[in-house]
Image 1: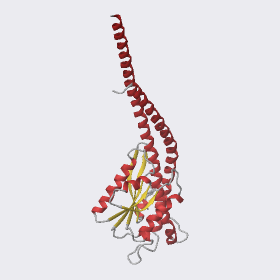
Image 2 (image 1 turned 180 degrees about the vertical axis):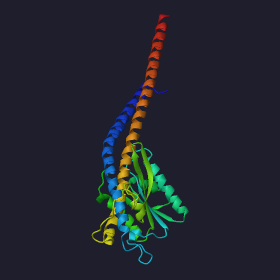
Image 3 (image 1 turned 90 degrees about the vertical axis):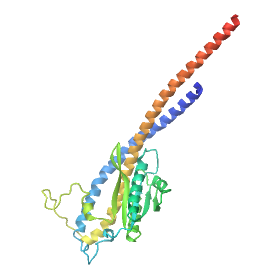
Image 4 (image 1 turned 180 degrees about the horizontal axis):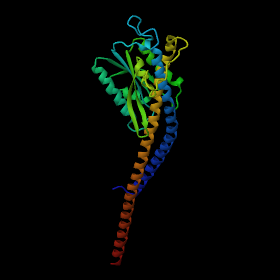
Length: 304
């Protein structure tokens, strides 16, 4: 049985840990609010840009069997090589968030491998690279240190890496696996198609879109300059926005998961302190009882 001094030392250690977890919880709460605002603000822009891509693609001169796709990023070809952009956090202490995302990416990679396709990764975040260290897949690009509040300039190299691999023929398809922020208590691992861009799917990203002829038809777009020129400028931007949105979702999910994990750790530390306090009281009472018995025995022996 542990002595009272040993229990007291452990209680002091647990109290120090509780102070740290409580401070980390409060920091996560503060940062979550700002990250959540950024996610909510970016979603409508991403959705409207998807609808714009679909509308412009419908007015281009390409996409016929003779002419071919209007832009290389629209080129749908036989998929033999797949790239997975795996988005995780740089730091830990956020529960099972990174583990769930990496597991979803590995499941998708296994399903693609079962179809006879070659799988490679673009790792975003230190935890992604650590998760791929013992996996049977290679990462041809690695991005770390993006920060808690990244800008498009910080995330666009990731999109350029995916675009370069696709246009050069290194990969035939690309997807993004990231934790989608749903609520404070829920972050869903999500697999989102990235390349090639399919205009019909891009249009469906806009929840306000109503098919032409519907009751709420919003009319047609007028293009200046030509649709082909606009498409060449907008498609790379669309991929950058998709990556940027996925990273914002991952950051908000990270802060949310860390807040919950640190709150649970603080509560567990409080319960452990209560349990140790009971053990300390019992050990102290046992020591006092033993000393009383020793004094009484000594007095009785002297009385003889």
